[in-house]
Image 1: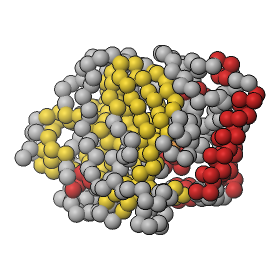
Image 2: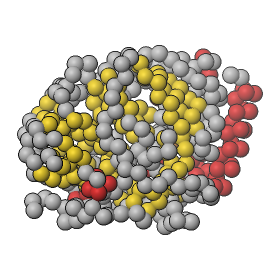
Image 3: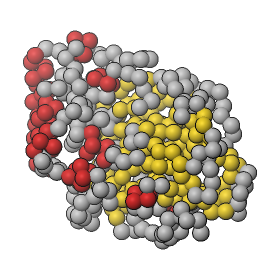
Image 4: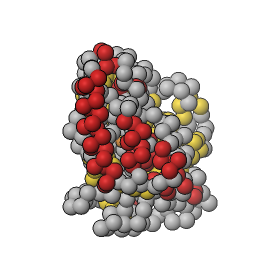
Length: 388
Ligand SMILES: [Cu+2]
């Protein structure tokens, strides 16, 4: 066995808002909701209070075309502060460590392998993407159920695929008590408006047109971002270039860390304190530890394989490597730009994404790993089987 092969990698059984009155009214509604939420999630009140004066004074859809959305009430837009400030450190200052506990009685989503295949492109030049923020306990392995904060009930959220120049019509509807938002890294847009938080039962909408090809992260940007992102609110959008890349089998891998607390009624909450500690319990490709060791990718001998790797983090990098293979092409810029060749390992930063290509011309079983093995060993390992 190759010396790079993880000691236990082949373990196929491994578990795991316009006037002041209106503004004030909406603030009160928001505060009432926030107050109830604080009861549910100790410590979160501080962060919500910090967000209070910045909450948009309305929640109408702010659909706009092209580069920036136009709020329905333009006077409101100048009052919109960023409710998603990544500089909000209220929780840090108080030293509190809230955790997300699933509401009692919430059905558990049983284990299901996350399909890594890149979804086909639509035939049109525009796509509609409508996500719902939902609290869903998810079984990620034989012995672990996590209290997921999700987009559409899964971790990661659905894979989105479009081309450079397509228009993405996006809507987020929030079904949770906690405010949420959406930050698409494939978008160039005013984040104060587009990426603002939306309250329970309400929606936020915006349009964007990706300029560059690549594998991009999307994630909830509501403060504290670490907690929202770290609790499962992320996914990948793959933007293909207008000109076709070489024909290939295309897979999407979203790398992420899980920081978990002790089980509550059999469900492990995401633990904010542990996220701050940067010592993950589980590290995954597509939200389940070792899932592609249990059920590998299968490709034909001679096929070109393209991995679109997005690193959700929330904190650590992913040193992507395929044991026994070399990437003939890694795109440093937007594919097909800035290709480099003959690469063994390349780190994808948290919040980044890249495309890796290889020619699967040698039959065998090839582990793909996060070569930072202290993290790969926690579940960021899978297998690509070449040939029958
Ligand atoms: Cu969120």
